[in-house]
Length: 377
Ligand code: XIL
Image (tube, rainbow, N blue to C red; front, side):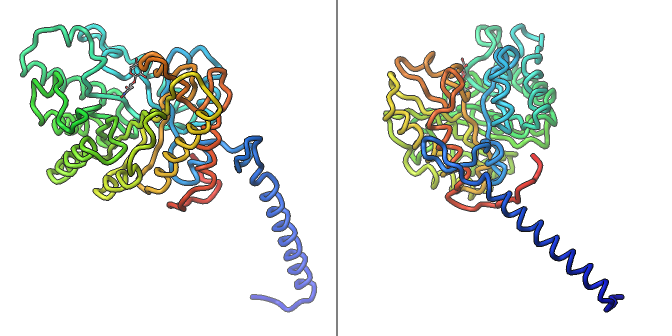
């Protein structure tokens, strides 16, 4: 029961005064660090991180990770844990890495990466269960019947997805199944099992780890064209058949010399409209060397456009860069005279592309399902 005692009223008004003073203070504190400008003119908080800004939008920001520098380079590990909320083992979960000798499984490198992720409250993308590349030599040079290959694949998927059951939020179950013209790539799996190998792999993976979201992942499907049309037709038909497909990964290995993919956002959106998650899984933007300020600027614009597209598509739930530092990028080893594709340079200094990516998250093109500050990871 409320009283009308003047003393009580003064307590109430004092409390009100204190509350509004505290409120003003809170507003002042909130305004203080806001919108500090970096030397390069980008409008983001001084202490903002990719993972922190991504969390505001419900986007996990990931990086590929390599086991050797993770164990031996403290700077690499520190930036990884600070800036990213997800990792993808760059090689350590591939079949050639875990089963060099038939029947002898070694998950130790991948386990160490998963442990790092857990310690730093990060998610893990599993990469990958079925691919034509980085297969063990005993498998590719062996003489197996189609029935044996089918058994080997099933066993591999059940064993690996089973080993990491509960640790993986998204599995790249089948990696790079298409040719650029939209036909299925001729691989050991297509040849042994036929086109159903994709649905089979998804079903086996689902049995082994029912909670992981299961993905098909490919490159050159960012824009609309024959290859992305083929992926679209495939996942649509898989969904219609009740095959456990949860998402599509757009690798997004871009080259500045090719320009930006045609209708990237609209393309991701049509997959999202099928009820799938869409992920940018292996983003980098290489250039023909040498590096120039103009190329670094073009690269920054490219990363910004990719992030803007992801922000604009609500089902784009994560964006992963394929290594965050040029020091460890796969590009120079695979594309002659090209490189500098990542958001940090070889000395771990953030490049213009880092700031444009951060800025795209801090000043999003659309609101998405904006969550309040202070949410946990
Ligand atoms: C690359 C790794 O980055 C390299 O270290 C390795 O030598 C070859 O594979 N598409 C993929 C990735 O799905 O697994 C590839 O990763 C890059 C292209």
